[in-house]
Image (tube, helix red, strand yellow):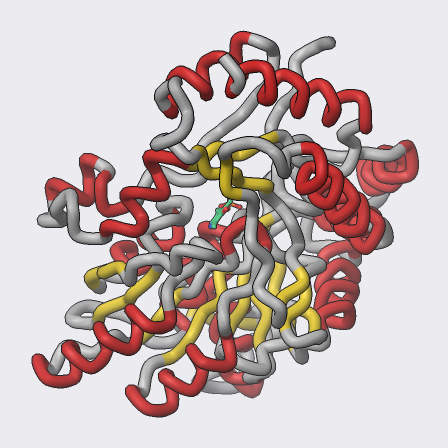
Length: 388
Ligand SMILES: *Cc1c(COP(=O)(O)O)cnc(C)c1O
């Protein structure tokens, strides 16, 4: 059996053809594919606006800026996430803090959020923005988080990098019912890909316009946004300080083609998850728990080792799987324990659920083109390792 990665892209001949067509066309970037991809995603999710960018990291950055995050502000997120969910606040000159995870979903805990908000209100240091992360594709408890946002006056960015194609209370992730902005990632390991790429979705037209400006240098060609009449047909104005965060047409064409298979991808991931649930049920591990309100995008399938019953250490189980050609991974190292975050004052031991999760979690291979044979090999190998 050749090496099985934990995740990988699923590229069809049609995907390849569509990118080749862009290469033969007039526009490699800033052509028709980007708005077509944006339209496909906003339509699928039921959001008014979608803005394609060159990564989810860029999406998080302009989402924070659009919500006015700046110096003196505080942004909260989960410690169990990719570093980008926290870094985006620091890019804006704001400070960041974390809310410990729920022991069943591994998402930011609503109970912990409420406790921390109450303490912050008393100390007059409430967050401006909270970024719930839909870990593994499982939606956070957005209705409750939204309720708290009303009570404590913060805005919400959903980091849905793992969750395109997932549903919360039967509605697509990205519809913005319980948040200001949702962001997606299209990195190759995620559910659909554009190689590098990301998107922000919102129902708020002012936020969408701001993010569109920030994506491309703060430049506008819309006369309504200008300070005076155009000097001529060449004219544009820079009215804000933006970036070059644009997605290319080659990437957008790939994304548009991938969108046609999104539901199939998620369905296959659910088949694989169900199969894992059955094949691994007898082992001393905790399988992923699905919240009844959520239909996960299933970017990841994370197991937790019951180390009090297993003779091997977490590291030994992980290494044994890697030695057998299984590309297990760990999502994620708690962000507050990263050297950079330690250097800015975070302490080990602050978020005990997150730290315990890190000592037990392993992401098993999960990708739509994974075969049943590959999956059976993963399960029999893990079974053999744990029965040592
Ligand atoms: C992948 C990921 C990101 C960053 O995505 P890029 O597109 O690589 O910038 C941010 N947040 C989470 C939770 C992710 O998994």
